Amino acid sequence: MQHQSTLANKSSWIGNAISKIEADYQRSADTHLIFLELPGFPDIDFYFKDESTHPSGSLKHRLARSLFLYAICNGWVHEGTTVVEASSGSTAVSEAYFAKLLGLPFVAVMPKSTSPDKIQAIEFYGGSCYFVDHPAEVYEVSRRIAQESDGHFMDQFTYAERATDWRGNNNIAESIFRQMKYENHPVPKWIVTGAGTGGTSATLGRYVRYEQHATQICVVDPENSVFYEFWKNNDPELCSEHGSRVEGIGRPRVEPSFVRTVVDHMIRVPDAGSFAAMLTLTSLLNKRVGGSTGTNFWGVLELAKQMKANGESGSIVTLICDSGERYMNTYYNPEWLEENGFSEDVASQQAMI
Ligand SMILES: *Cc1c(COP(=O)(O)O)cnc(C)c1O
Image (cartoon, rainbow, N blue to C red; front, side, top):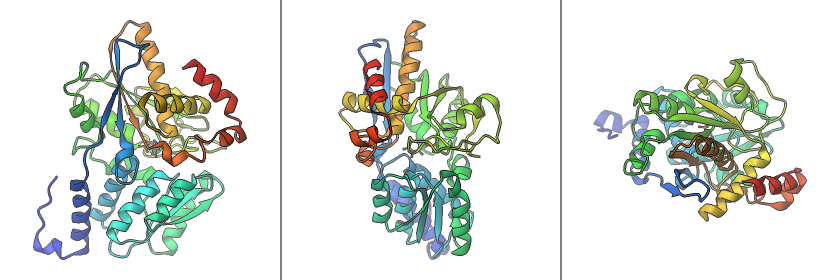
């Protein structure tokens, strides 16, 4: 998208801010779609959209860009506004990147379990971090900090689904379908994604309907998340005692951005299964992937087994949400797995994949 700057908006802070975000977009390349064959599934082609290659390291780069543009165009963020976000980490890293680009103060409110590597990345971009004991506290604390600093609570969990242009504008769905164009099965049977805000599944689901593709959307959900129950029973009051242990996905409450009616299928994935699949995929791609990418791959394998049993052929697409380098102290650390009681289960799950 090209913005024709007029003299009037160029001289204003808002015009400058939008131009800077658009210039950042111009400097960026699209993310790769990596092809993988698996010997057990000769009739199925697997694809991984590598969102770890964005400048701020995850699929949240897209979301942060959209949220900033939305907030600026709504008149919610202007010169000097302190931007506050409730985040389990990745969104805060990407928003800190854009806040720095625009010269705005940024505060991330996160569960204290957030990985040290993400905290380091937020601070690298000049953001500050505020920690809460329970993941469910992030919303209220963010709102309070924004109020006290006369700032703006970005609120990804409310606005993710509406800040993204779902019909196109090179969103993740349009990019996937363009990159699949010359493949054997250009229209995937399934696209598999996790849900944190639910923004990615909302964009994918709306886009495939709008473009009338036969693709189905499958959302994978970790332990301690309410999304699966909500998708089944449509109870918006669901709450879970504990936070998700797979960073980036699974929520203790039903988030407004999770649009259940565009999701065709959901799979519950045990946490040990996510970490096992993460390790397996890392060796298959020779590339360290994050925990939520493991959850995705677990779901992909479930669907592939079903397709094989039904004698179907076709393609399955999923995302590499972020890189494993962010989790060297946690999921990739045998001591962390042991301390959190995962060691045996991860080993036995890995043997089954
Ligand atoms: C946010 C996030 C997801 C899920 O994406 P949503 O669009 O928020 O549902 C998956 N993995 C990681 C690492 C994330 O940060």
